[in-house]
Image 1 (cartoon, rainbow, N blue to C red):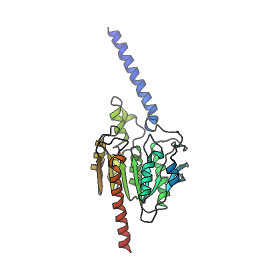
Image 2 (image 1 turned 30 degrees about the vertical axis):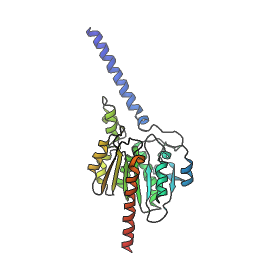
Image 3 (image 1 turned 180 degrees about the horizontal axis):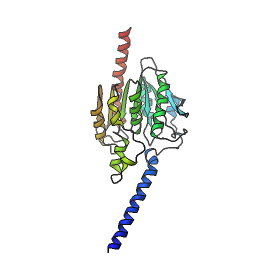
Image 4 (image 1 turned 90 degrees about the vertical axis):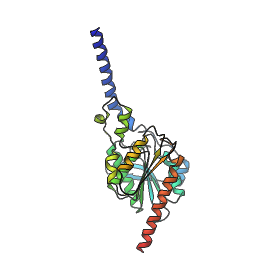
Length: 277
C-alpha cells in the first residue's frame, strides 16, 4: 500500500514538473500567439492609410500604417493592439479616429503581420519608441491608445516620452497578475520572462489618462482597471462599460468616452495656442 502510494506521488510530481517545464518553455506562445502569422488585409484601412517603415534602435525595419492629422491642432493617435491580433483588428478604431478628424498610426510589433524579429517585452518597447519617433516628428500632439497587451506597451512609452494623453482599453495591472490567476498552481511570478508591469509605472505618468473596459471582461477582470485608476495621478478618468467583454468595449460604449476625451484634449490644445498668440 505504501509502495503504491509512493509510486502515485512520484507520478503526480513528475507530471507536475513536466507541466511546469512546458509552461515555462511555451510562455512565449501564450503571450504572443500570433507571432509570425502573415498580415491580414482590410481594404478600407488600406485606402485610408499608407504603409510606413519604422526602424527600431536594434536594427529591425517594421511595417506600420499611418494617416497624418488634418491640421496642426489635431492629435495623432498611436494604436497598440492586443496579443492575439495584428494591426488590422484596430482598423475600426483607426477609421473612426480619421473620420473624427484625428491622425492615426497603427503600430505593428516585431514578429507580427509579417514583420521580422521575435516578440518580447523589451523588443515591443523598442517598436513603440520607433512608432512614437515617427509620429512625433510630424505632430506635437501624440495620444497613445493601448488595448490589452498594448496597454503594457503604451504605459511604458507614456512613462518615458512626452505625450498629450494616454488611453487604456482593457488594461492589466501586469501580465504576470493575469497569468497567476489563470495558472494558480504554478509559480508563475518566478517563471515569467515578460511582465509588462503597468501598476508600478502608471503613477509616474503626468499626462491625462482615460481607462475603459467591460464589466464582463473575463480575460482581464475589471478589478485591474480599478487598481490602475487608483494608482494613477493627476487628470484621470475611468469608464466601466456595462455588459461589455474583453473584445467589444469600444463598440458597446467605449467609443463615446474616448471621443469625448479626445475632443476635450483638442479644445484644450487649441485654447493654449490661442492664448499664446
